[in-house]
Length: 240
Image 1: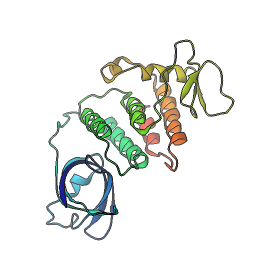
Image 2: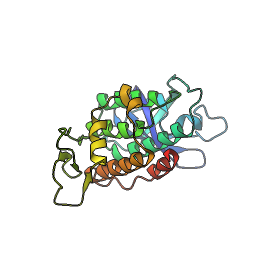
Image 3: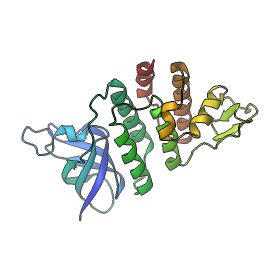
């Protein structure tokens, strides 16, 4: 059968001289892998630029029972705002988010709330100036949909954050997987923020790098087989 769905490209690999296999998060089917023939040929209707990570697409796809690699009939980009002055930080954050999504979203099940969250977040990445803590905020919000959103800490008990349990505590956990103050306090404050308030949430470059390392580590604790995120090292360099 043939379906129309929106999708977000997460990753592509070369399959032959002219074809690729693209992994996309789709509105109707969740994570799917698609064979796209001839996309690298000179006369292809589907240009390679449409398959860059985090490209948002309108897709017409064939759907066969039993899963596996599916096929695409046609695709086109979803019209969106183009930032007039987006710099290297926007591009680096985009690469980081693409890697995170590729390594964390595994379910071949539709999740409309997650899909709409991703679409909204990617639209914000097209703005001319995005908050310096956008990537931290994004990771925490994404964890809601992945099932391990941290608990909010009380004001007098945020000295430590237990990465294994996802909770704040006034006392040190009896294992090494925790975040200590002041990083735990910054995490608690960020959890209480919303996107509109990110611009006023101040962190030093060093504090931002440390918190990013901790949140990535938190993800690794809660997603079996996620593997190591690599692009956050580049992100840390950019924000330093």
